[in-house]
Image 1 (spheres, rainbow, N blue to C red):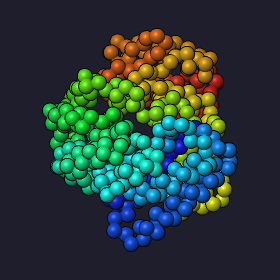
Image 2: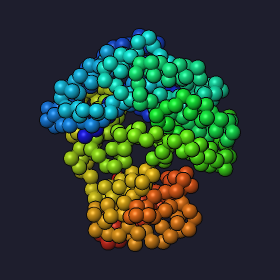
Image 3: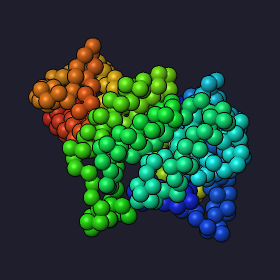
Image 4: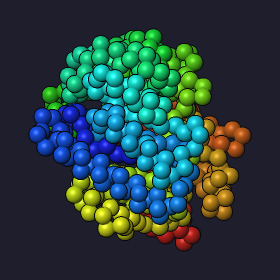
Length: 397
């Protein structure tokens, strides 16, 4: 099993972010809010530890929000409780996401490392001042570089950096040059995300009102394709649509998601999939606390239908460079994936968007670039096929 712990706090909300988080800023009640959150989280850990009976845990991921806003002593206490209520496997991957301005606080990174955190994911996003300001980030390029140096000094040997491409005003050469600068920091892992303009966010409103303009589609394609080529030539494996790693440093937690492992989500808005059931915690802190105190935070859980499992198999496996093992589809459905999607697969193959080899269907790099559209078509065709045969119900994944 995998554990995900959602930390719903940030010092300031980024202008592109649509994740559930609460900006603490200089709020005088901030320390009280954090204490209430931690108290409820400890209760939730105890609840699931009792119900699941010291399940083995292979990965722990502190995500957010900004987990590095929590004191290192709190992270240490949470890891200790995890060890008490679950069986944390030897060599378990324990990741904490953080931003440079908080990770650089005195003694913070060494204390995290001593607490058991062995993987740090740093939200760098850009090394250019104008882009950082536009995104609403609180750090600068120097902070990001110093964070990498501080992490190495603290003993961190598994470091991941997040970057965003396709930003307003960003050129292809500028992006590729920045990637080469990032490579000089020698991170073990890189996550490169194309900018997504989430409805209602300040950056999306700026775009909608014509205040900012995205790079042309052709330039965005070049950023993705040529950026991936630079990383692969530097020894990074392109193992998932947005993720690159040196050999042996793929994110085990995320690989678990993509391979269909069970996971328990703790904290506001966190989702769990355990024993064929799925539920999502309330996003409002008071409602989440009430659900935990009731002893039944999974009261609204849904049993995953066969249709949901089939659609997730297609979506998650095709995100990886290995792709979808067509036999896995047959084992789950009793059907032939290549036959069910014959026309679509032929069209995609002709356009160089997919490859089929050794029983696996996978996206090419060009296919990864338009993966959302392709997956949507696979979903539509799958639902139609099974509704036609009456094999699967209509519950959406």
